[in-house]
Length: 89
Image (cartoon, rainbow, N blue to C red):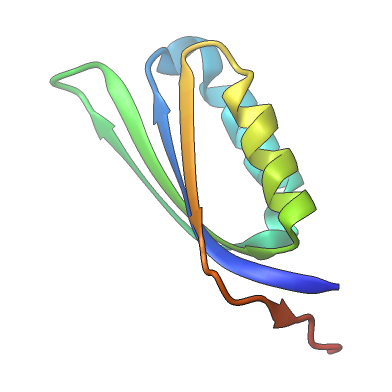
């Protein structure tokens, strides 16, 4: 199966209500996550999260779709135009 590398940007506008659900989803898709950086923007009362991923279009789409359905969560993703073969390890 072919993988794509990309970045998912997440804005959490209601961190108290949805932070746990966001973290559960990210943990569930941990196998495609390369790295993650999250910052609270206290002045505006939101959290900003960047997640670097390496996975199939289906897996990345499933993660972003589930995140986007959470209340108070906005998601955008950008993926490489080139796909990569999954290496057996």
